[in-house]
Amino acid sequence: MGSKVAENRSERILSIDALRGFDMLLISGGATFLVLMENKTGLEWVDWIALQMTHPAWNGFTFYDFIFPLFLFIAGISLTFSLNKRRKIGSTKNALYKKAFWRMIILIVLGIFYKNAPVPFFEPSEIRFVSVLGRIGIAVMATTILYLNFSQRGRLFWVAGILLVYYAALYLIPVPGYGAGDLSFEGNLVGWIDRNFLPGRLLQGTYDELGILTQFPALCITLLGSYAGDILRSGAQKIQKFQSLIMAGIICMIIGLLWGLHFPVNKHLWTSSFILLTSGMAFLFMAAFYWLIDIKNYRRWAFFFQVIGLNSLTIYLAYRFIDFGTTSRLLFSGLINPLPALWHEVFIAFGAMILVWLFLYFLYRNRLFLKI
Image (cartoon, rainbow, N blue to C red; front, side, top):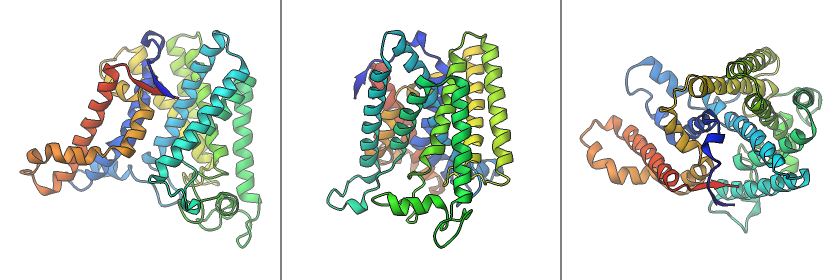
């Protein structure tokens, strides 16, 4: 891992970086800012957006559920460009497997530090071993293997197979004390496997939503992202690529919503319907950004997001270990204090977002991009 200059921007698709930046903005303070807007303006639509930035208690779906799947999807898109570039310059499959493996290990370790800092090294039962970064590493490793050995159609069969087997497992394998097909918080198969086979601390106590079994449906999002990447890499006309992304998104969303009538959309369990719904949305978001930036050439607005998207790992780690909120309070409280107290936290959160972007802009200007 180190600081490297990003690829020549002329070879990059700006909409990918911008979409990644949009996603990371919500992770690194944007969602907090929107949540704090609730009940401040008297406008129903603002309150509705604020409510979309929280997870449902169990079944159901909000926009906040989409943020992590979108990043997994973008990871799949980016992977296609990286793998094909390296194959073009002569990298062997074994070399690419090795690189993906060590990237996975590094991300798992970083994820453990991120989720547990300060890490209770002498109390392993209190360590949470699974994480967002670990899930990304595992999904990218699996997608690398499948991408290098299967065609587009073959990878779609893998997606279908994994999602169908996962569906069957949750409905047909009996959980001791609860039986088969119990998708409740206490009785689901995901939790039983985590309680019996996953060491350390489980986030939800009875299970962990980033645990063992949910790794399998989650990697399907990255696999579908690789399908989108192949569309964007193809020699087709830009408008044809846009249409292909739209079509893939609509198909995934329709199947996901229909499947959700029996297998509920549930981020906590990463249900098959949730995977297809969020993947469909990701196809559509990618299409929208591609149309605006790379087809219509409305590029200036994208720079704000590009600065974030080019250093996504940096800001994810920095947001955990640097208290931008406290710095914002120290710098801006003198300006904010005369305003109604109701708005203080909102503007502190907004100030923190400004500081995040300026920090990333400094790195961008100095060509510092953290990559693994």
